[in-house]
Length: 165
Image 1 (cartoon, helix red, strand yellow):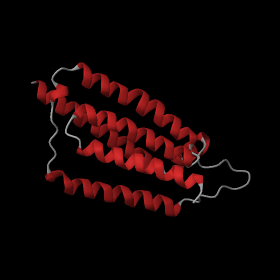
Image 2: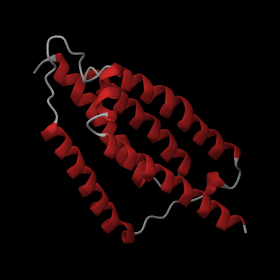
Image 3: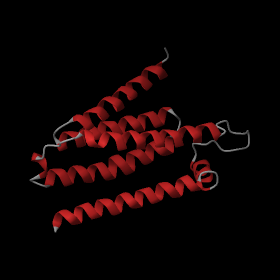
């Protein structure tokens, strides 16, 4: 077993373990801090995959922006720190269906993609390579994901607005 394998397994254990703690923790502040370790583990896995650009974006956008904003929002709100999170089993079926569909899309993309770059071609992990493949071969998937994010934002705004009225 090489040092690369050991580092990979350490990042994998960190990511999976802290991800499990995010889901199972009853305290929202603890869940937010476990999410920090999960996002760092994912960034480490991206570095091991030689996807440096995605690792830096992961750290800057998710850890540096969204997670810090979430932590400030949770810690500055007095009532939120005492909230106990309840999870029900009613959401298991939609989660399994969504995960299955996501895995189907990922597997189909992996089977159709030529992962070996030609001698004169830039590798897949560069910014140019990512942009080219997203806007040529996978433009439909890219647009569908944008629509999914828009729908999620509209749903979140609707839920937040309904609670205030």
